[in-house]
Image (cartoon, rainbow, N blue to C red):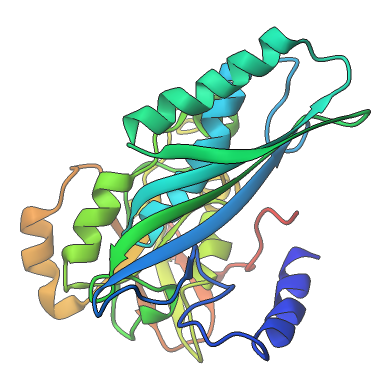
Length: 297
C-alpha cells in the first residue's frame, strides 16, 4: 500500500508544489535562503510492535531510534542536521518516568549530532506508543545528492554490512552523518539513499527510466548475526532497517574514490545498467532476477 499511496500523493502534490524536490526522496528541499545555502526537511514515525517492542526495548533505546531514523534521512541527502520537533503519543498506562527516559534517549543523540529540539506535541491514548519527529537540516545546493542522480555505468556501493538488523542493530545504530557529508562533497558520487526497507527496494528507488542494476552476491557484506545462515543473502537483500548508505559512483572516478574512501567498511556491490531489472550474480555464477520488494508499511 505504501508505494501505491506515495505514487498517488505525488500526482496530487505536484499540482501545488514548485519545490526542487518534494516527496520521493529522503528529504524535501525547501526554497533556498541564498544562492547556495538551502534547507532540507524530513519526518518519520515509529510505532510499538512495528518498529520496536516496548516489552524488549527500553524507553531510551526507543527515543534513540526515533531520532536516528530521521538523522539517517539527513545523512542520505548529504546535509547537516539543525532542528527537530518531537510528537509523542503515549499509552494511557505509561508513567512520567518512562516518558522522561524516552525523551532523554532523544536528547542524548540530539546532543551528539548538534540537533536542537525546538518543540513538539504530547498526547495520550489507549493505543500503542508512537513517536513522530520532523527534522530540518542545512546543505549546499551544489553538493546536494538526489536519488535521481544515478547514471548508466555507475558503480554501486554500500557503507557497511547488511541483514539481520532485528538482532539489535535497528534499535541502536548510529546515523551516518559524517559519511553523508563526505559523499556529498565528492563529485564522483551521483546518488545516495539510506537502506530502510531493504537493499533491493531501496536500490530500485535510485533507478530512473530504464535503468537497472546487477549485484554481486560475493561482494555484499553480511552482518555477523546472519553470516553463517543458509538464507544470509536473502536477509541482506530484503531485511531492511540497516540504515547504511547506498550510493552510486561514476566509473571514471572510481579509482580515485577508492583510494580516499572512508570508512574501510565501504564496499562495491554491483553496477548500474540499462536492463530495467535488478539481478544478482550468485556465488555459483548463476544470474537471477530479484523481486523489487522490501518492507512495506
